[in-house]
Length: 209
Ligand SMILES: [Fe+2]
Ligand SMILES: [Fe+2]
Image 1 (cartoon, rainbow, N blue to C red):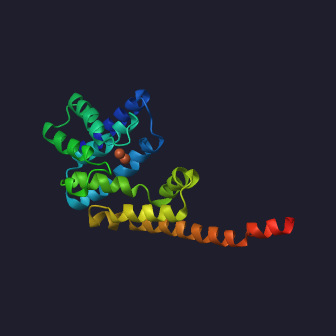
Image 2: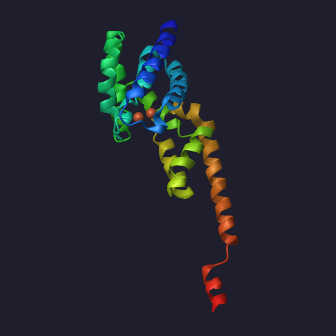
């Protein structure tokens, strides 16, 4: 446990340094995202009996490639993570499992490819960050305000939830998922009520004539 705490602090500093010179910072993959993904991953890793040091490295370095302007960034993150882990003398036998999980965390990689516990946990914890109070805020900023409808957002959320790799993730994330889902269902109902109150365009045109 002590070494896990040590690595959390070491990787937090590494990440802060990396972000200072990263070529294309992605605002939704910054330190706050990493901290939330770590919180969920730690719970899941303990539940499933995984190695917490591997999990820390996996989570803290998984989005490095995102800050290089790449949407599909697993491979790039793994490449950047390798040099950091080697430079920091991270335990040699724990490097490959961490890099494997990082390389396979893109949504374009099929679930079957994520065979290790670390790959499954990272993928799920990353997806669960779209739920809860912060998740609602992210959905509004990045989807609703950019033209997606509430119906489309609810469909995306459902797909995300159903695509989780392990049942334990649903146990851990269910409350936040329900909260987010309820919020958008109610928002949709409110929008429908408001739309019904609006005068139909045809009526207005008819009055003008
Ligand atoms: Fe990512
Ligand atoms: Fe992420």
